[in-house]
Length: 252
Length: 113
Image (cartoon, rainbow over all chains, first blue to last red; front, side):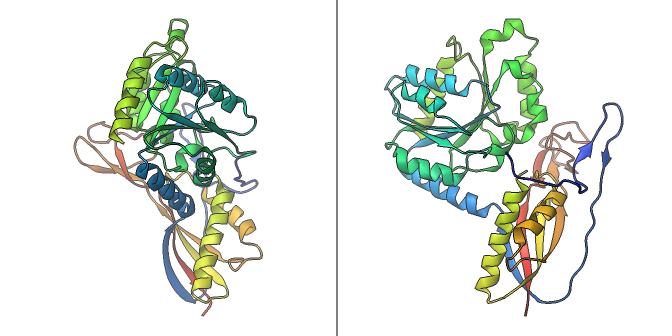
């Protein structure tokens, strides 16, 4: 599980809110110390991951490999989308996949059945892939030059937003069963993405989901998002996504 | 989020810097934490105490400077504070583009003479 802990302590910045009433925030305090030698450090706390991510990015860019970090809640249809994408590309573009899950090889086995090379990263208790995991996966996978690399992150709409893997772009996937207000509730992920895929459109007749409203909410977090609405299951909308992939790889 | 990992990263970072400067003890660490960085400062303090145990940073004071998040309106150009990632411009109602407030950095450390 995620490793943060603050039991018994006030949480400065955490808001407890009741609908219709104003929120209550708790405060924090500070204390002071004596003299000594001060050294400027000026380093990002996530510098280590960012540095390794930059190394990954350099490696991928030099080989003209377009790496896409697929992020979403669990169950949005990432793996099915990948299976269908690979099948529709059917050898026209070289594809390789890094799968990320806490446990099992289930997703990697599904990708393997499509014929695309794949490596599974199991994070154990971890909730996101990081640059080191991707670095090690790349060593095993050895994707060819001029290929599409899909990194299917651990299903989690929170943590992966913080961890650069060295990808060219994040693709956030939301399915129509998740509620159109998802982007308002998880804005950081939508802000971090370049592309947003709205999946399972075949289920729209059974739902009160407004695609337009979902897009509008997502644009509040990121006005520059590009959207594709599709159904990995029926194939509806998949052509536009494949065209984007082709164009993006050519531009890599 | 991940305050323990972050605390461990802070300890690693400051111990490396302190060793490079020939110091034996880190007395104070100055951090900048943006209000929209996703970091819970009190969780971070708690985790830091545990992470720093038996290292050069044990007992160091964690001085956190919070950077208030603010953004600029893409329509009218006005800069305004942001309480969340989705905040509308008080002037014209457009959604602000974040400029400050997601920082998470070690600014400086104070070591023994």
